[in-house]
Image 1 (cartoon, rainbow, N blue to C red):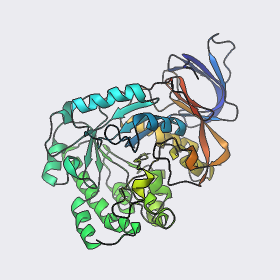
Image 2: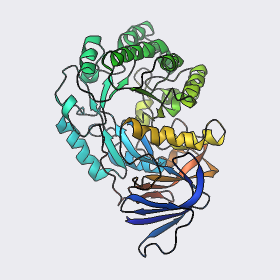
Image 3: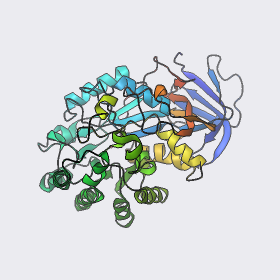
Image 4: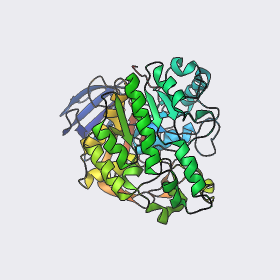
Length: 442
């Protein structure tokens, strides 16, 4: 495959900003959407490449706002090259990556290092969080470009754990950047680890890091956000209690997200896939699934992220609690959610909003998240006419597995386009394509 500067998509079912699907053509020049019409005249440009999209749906490319791509320092699990390939296969055209690499992303220098690595390795667009520490390094407020500040209130050790209210208060009180929190009460987790010590069934993980631990941390983050009217985002909300809290007390400057695994998996998964079901915050009950779904449908939860956090199968095979928490997700998230749409649980337009439009709005990423003239040509053509299973041998993530293995899904990406470049087509990634660093109008 080569990189094209001019592209025409023919006769796709285009998801327009009004939420309607209408068949038409899309002209792309130099990475931007130029024209959208029921039929565009031929030839538009002798050098234009054309894609026959008959029978396919054209959606804005997925923006995954929470991933852990492990580079630098943990490349045996994943790296920016393999992760961006996995994104392309999953219809993910942009990602926001977390700071818990080695070294930690807490300074301008470590941020610049990631940006340089991504510019060479990523076939999709990229952005990075900066991590908060107890030291309150000046780069927390000054490093650029960043999409926000990440605070681990729990499920972390070392410098990135910030779990004491006075320290959290200090971070919330300074600056205006979006603060994204992993909300779990570390002290409650510590006490319950002692209480349940010696149990090696991974299902105990959901009791150790229970609903109450998540709720207490979310309540604290909300309190501090309201105190300073500070822009707050609750990462990977997992409990019914948090969803109900947000339903009744969610200021306009607060947003929250949910993962496909917290919508579609629950504690029963431990019986079938063991430690592959282990993540932070943990899987919850079927009741939590139900309440989270309703909160998403009602707009209480704003959008979807994967929390892609891969570990090797060898690492996952260790006995609990030595097994690490986390699972991959960028390759399956869009197909999982479009399968829910095909089953009538939501609409295709809602999926696109949750996985692209609302993310671009929350993180103030300009010219992304919609199919309209002037917008960046970050797009995905999906097939809702056929189903195919999640198979381990198809996974492009370096970890080589999925918690959804064996699930039959529709809505798989057929063609993924980033900045007008075809980066994935016919089951293959285009190694000549390159993504760009995302901008944030903060």
